[in-house]
Image 1 (cartoon, rainbow, N blue to C red):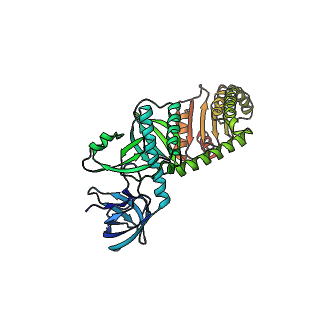
Image 2: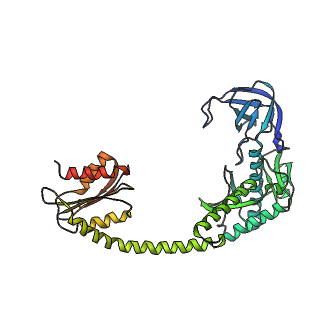
Image 3: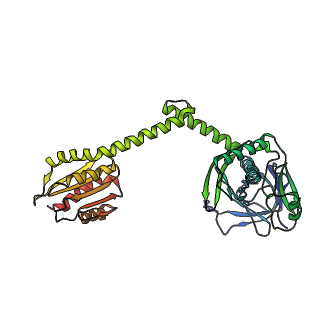
Length: 406
């Protein structure tokens, strides 16, 4: 016989007694659990199996820890545990904080989906209850900020009214006559969850008894997922934690900006404008700075046996673009080779005057083959990056030795 699902009628029960019908080692190990696992079949259970977008419960069967709960094709429920459980009578218990959290999220999803469909014509096509946030995928036009705010306000209004949440049983035809939100094609007697005055939906999950137990719903974002719109949300304890985190984060940002929390957005916008202006000024100044730097470095350039002037420099705390500007400024002078590296990132720029017969791209390849990294370029100008920035100085030394072997 199928496992009797005690949570169908009383999801608030956190312990139960059952009979162990079978316990045997599992052929498929549980992901993330290296030790041997056992599969236990019971005559009845309060432990919810993963299904319908809702994760499984955790708990204990006797001394065994329940690691997973699975819905089998024959309507049995398999309990995956970390040690054998003797056949016969066993006491079971549920990890209540996890169960109640899932009840809040799942009932909140029913309510939120009902509001989106009833008020804005956006049906829910899928639901996922995640460890941190949950989500529903809506089909239809992109929900605007006003729609999202309106849906959250309407759902929370129902929560504050503390409406009754009840379990109903009937056929698909009977539920269709009662105005079910989403019809199903399953035959026989179905279980449905009704939120008084707003929603009726077939569902095998666990739910609270009154909407007030959801606590509140807080939307966390909306993004495009293929042809649908994914709305992320948190309910109850998760919403309270998220609100506290948001408040602490806003206070921290306001403190760093030396402004009131309500002025943080305006202060950030001002800083972004200032940063953009500073970035434009920096880009305009970099070529000029490189020209002056090049003059100074050329005065102290070392000479190779063939008369080539070599400038090799390991730069620190420089803008990555500066290497290119400096290399260009240096190699405007005849008979100059520039070997430049950035200490923090391992970026390399090898360049030479166009009249030189050498090939700095080939030189860069040889350095990267020995020290690791990627890059390339032309005969006169090549760029790359080392896999390990700590080897920047070694890269310059190697390049110099290849240019002028002793």
